[in-house]
Amino acid sequence: MMNTLGPFEHCVQQYGATVLRVCRAALGPNADAEDAWSETFLSALRSWPTMPEDTNVEAWLVRIAKNKTFDIIRTRGRRAIPTDRLPELSAGLDDAGLPDLTVWQLVAQLPERQRLAVAYHYLGGLPHTETAAVIGSTPEAVRRASADGIKTLRRRMKRSTSWEQPDE
Amino acid sequence: MSNQTSPRPAAVDIQFPIEPGVLELLHARLVASAADSGTLDIVYRTVDSPIGKLLLAKTDRGLLRVAYEREGFDTVLEKLSARVSPRILHSPSHLDDVASQLEEYFAGHRHRFELQLDQRLSAGFRHQVQQYLPRIDYGFTRSYKQVAEAVGNPTAVRAVGTACATNPLPIVVPCHRVLRSDGTLGGYVGGLDAKSTLLTLEHAVRATPAGGA
Image (cartoon, rainbow over all chains, first blue to last red; front, side, top):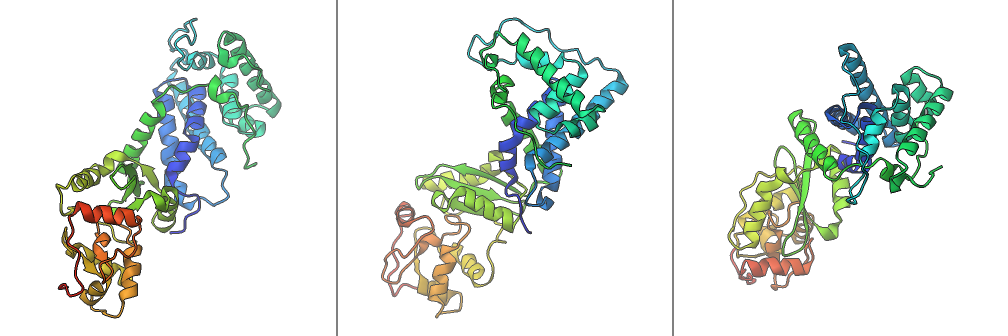
């Protein structure tokens, strides 16, 4: 068999976190996000041996994750499951030196368009144009939705040291 | 459509943290469902041993590869990926049986491995030699020349050396039990220190040039 991209394990190690961030931002910090992560990597593993050598693996994975998460969102819509069934946000932040996970609850409370722009564009790195095609919007609107979402997060996370520095 | 992702702010990792253990848990679930769905071709793990860290890799047919750290674990995995399949995941539990037999061997309690072997990495004369090696019992040695004779090709002494040097399953397929006719060590894929440690562990009686084949 002709190999092109190398052992799949490296792919999971390298991009597992990015894919989880995309799934969590799109779906919330819950079991759905974990299922989307698993389905993304399982589907990638299936196609792995036939992927061309010059594949941008990260972009390819984010696209699979985008499709999986978007499918789940559509299914949720049909089932009319509320998306705001998340635990209430606690004000206390990061006092034990542990990762501050509040941000995921805040992302989940963003309007859907901002949430998806943050997931696919800001965290997943997909271009505005491609993100726009998925969420049925214009590239300019995606750029704005992503920036507005991050601005809201920054405002609400200002007590957390990890959000102190402007990053652009 | 562009094949590139746009650059992301470096702070993403700390601003959107993932709690410890989550990715490990998801990884374990991925291994399980990949194995269930038949999309996992090779599993691997590393183990510690008195002769350094070892890489163990396995397919559904059996143990495929044992590698020494000096061979470069990444290089070994890349080669397996190219020759067998890139559907490779790290999964210690799939190799528990191999790990525990090795542990027993290094503790001196096991003299023979009872493992299914996947010998697809060996072919031709090398395969023939590697098939013969387990017939050299624990604690005994043969010379390259004796092995050449035993496999019916008495002049192929150098080729026996190559077959030993390219053994994909060292320790389990005991190429360390093959020495030069004068009793000196010859070569070893794991280095000469490893070879002599294994022979010392086995209390090997070095074969004399006249020793029976």
